[in-house]
Image (cartoon, rainbow, N blue to C red; front, side, top):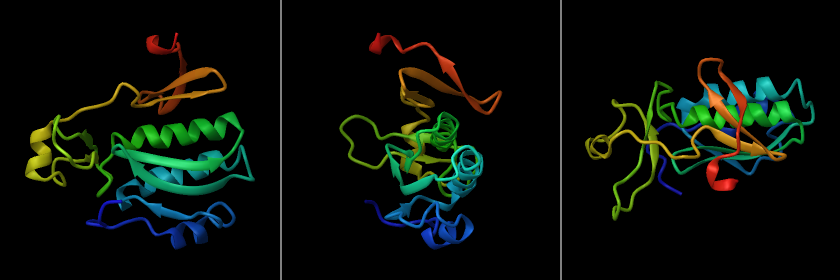
Amino acid sequence: MHSADFPRIKLDDLQSDFPGVFDSAKYVDVGIGWLPLIRAFVEEALPHDPSLVVHEIKEKWGSARIWCDTPVLESRLAKGKAEAKSALTCEVCGAKGWLRRPPPGRMAWWRTLCQEHASRDQQEWGQQTRWTAGKMQYDGQWYEYDSATDSMVPVETPERFR
């Protein structure tokens, strides 16, 4: 885990805002810039699955990962959308951001940051993405985040999985 070098979302706040959803969560360890994404996920998922339970939220490979229990497709798509949007949103301030991935041979955390919050070193890494960015698979169907409709839309299975 990296140091908390910028404001983080507080688990207590999520527990009080969404009773029952975060009560058994181990922890939340992401920047405050992603708070609107987390709130939107819960507000979109909860009507489809009132028994939604979130276990933890953390940053992994520069974007948010949400561990939750829900077998409901609409709730899982809301989760996928929040994770996809986190790879486009600065974790510090919530502005448009880019995945900052260190160059080969360089050991450093991947981060999604805007130009203002990226260090000079991170700015030199450029703006990148991963082939999996914005994609998810559930029950054999692949989905991809579509920014024009702000939704996860069905897509063909990626070539590498055919």
